[in-house]
Image (cartoon, rainbow, N blue to C red):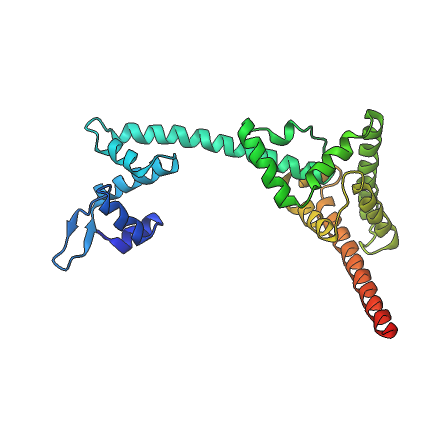
Length: 267
């Protein structure tokens, strides 16, 4: 038997939720002790599981009560139905994850995505909602800017941009194989070329550059792309970008200090 607190912890819900289910007669205690405490047996646990499954599928509580109280209710059949629904939901979630991953790659200038592919896995209504959320998440006009810039290029220009980006990574990999440290002038010059190359797609902030550097070694799609050039390139490239970003931040701080000093002298 489980107390209210024990069952709430088991199901990862609140005690108040169990009290609410009791009030609706959706989940009644199996026993109420002389002290007024509520206790739940294994049958109650299984019923709670069904309640939570149906809630996950979007049913209202009173609808769930009607289903569970039906004399024709078959728990095994219900579990099979839940499994099928959850499997479908999981497949769709995986598709959405692939879409998000591809969009990250697109915004980083690693792959070409059409507007349609940006919303693979979404219905027309969901596309509109996702578009709004994407704009909020990635900052003002970043999505539009990236897509519009890319679509403004001719096919020949797009191909030249892709080849230029690929050559930068190949050259960085060559310096890595030659044993050059990430802070060497030759490698950092390539980092500057990489930074400039990203401007074909959008104007990257220091935060975006730092985020890309981290993503290059942590995101499986980026790792796969760079490992095809050299197995050790993701970590090396990430370190190259980190050093480049550190220099940019140091220079930015120096400029701010100089401006403050100049303003102080002027006053």
